[in-house]
Structures are given as C-alpha cells and as structure tokens.
Image 1 (cartoon, rainbow, N blue to C red):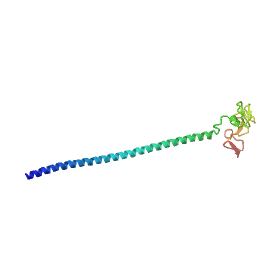
Image 2 (image 1 turned 180 degrees about the vertical axis):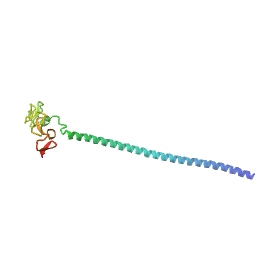
Image 3 (image 1 turned 30 degrees about the horizontal axis):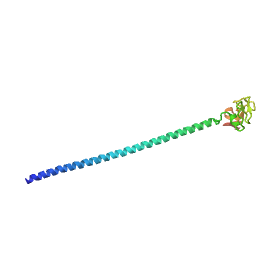
Length: 163
C-alpha cells in the first residue's frame, strides 16, 4: 500500500506539474504573440509615417512646379510684350498734365493728334520710312525688330547699331 500511495502522490504531482507547464507555455505563447503584434504595429507606424512624409514632399513639389510655371508665364509675357499693362499710350502719358480727353492720339508732348499720324506723317500702327521707327499712339518709337534697320546697320533687339 505504501507503493500505491507513492504512485498516487506522484500522479497528483504530475498532474499539477502538467497544469503549471501548460500555463507557463500559454503565457510564453501570449508574450510571443504580443511581441509579434508589437513589431507589426511598429512596422505599420513606420510605413504610415513614410507615406505621410512622401505625401508632404509630393505636395511641396507640386506647389514649387506651379510657382515656377506662374513665374515663367509672367516672364514670357513681359519678354514678348513689354507694354503689357499699357492700354493706350495717350492715357498713360497724359496723366501728368491732367488731360484725359479720349479724342485722339498723343504725340508724346501732351498734344492730342486727331489725324492718326505721327510727326513725320507716318500713319498710326505702321513702320516709318525712317527705319527703325514705328508710329504708335502718335509717337515714333524704335522698333528695329518689327520694322528692320537701314542699310549699314544691324539690329540689336529694338534698336539699330552701326555694322
């Protein structure tokens, strides 16, 4: 009978050990699962931060490209048409003397020219016989690019210089 008691004791002890081991294994598995979940969360957070950072960079690049396009457009407008904001020459020139009469063209000194010609007789918006001048708003302005240069001269954008 003594042996039988020992077997019973050892059986109970074995059962308790099995339960304890099962609990320990469960806890270790849970800890491992938590570690893996934590690692996944960290990786996901890093990926989200990278994604947000990439979006910010893309937005900055888009704004910079738009700014460059706007600046280029403004530069091109001024390059091809330097008098963009000048609607009519006589209004701009007459603001100083208070003459706002809109009956004709200005010849540059505040006097209205009603016949549509410049001082040398050139019709409005045409090239003068005296190159490189162009009649605009009653004034002769240099326009070598549009009207050409006399013989012996070469064009330097709107003016002419001796060859």
